[in-house]
Amino acid sequence: MTSSPGAPGHNGVVATDSSSTRFGEIVRTSAWHGVRVGDPVVVNAPKERRQQWTFVAHVVNEATGDEWVEVRGGRVGESKGRSFLPELIYPSGARKGSRVTGLSLATAPQLALD
Image (tube, rainbow, N blue to C red; front, side, top):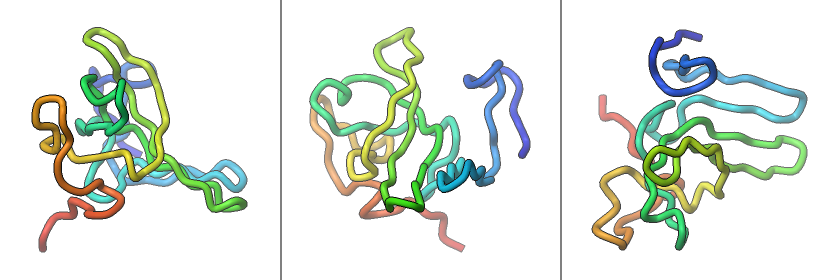
């Protein structure tokens, strides 16, 4: 896994490749549906919609099939870690004022065209 010094994250270092880490049945991936660690995302939940979030990881519990997306951010100056269902995560351009438009990343991945 490569890292970028000075970027937000654990000890000021953030993973920049799409590596996966396994902890038993839990699999964390640092890239998901076209977003990577540190990319801005929108969380479509009433309180979180007006806050600033960055993608951290996509996580799957292979034993139960549960999955979630970890993000970091919050209000200006905060750096809270939170997790949300994939259906609530949208690309950064989806916010139009206090509304979220378009499809979530779970429904419409933002993958690069070859």
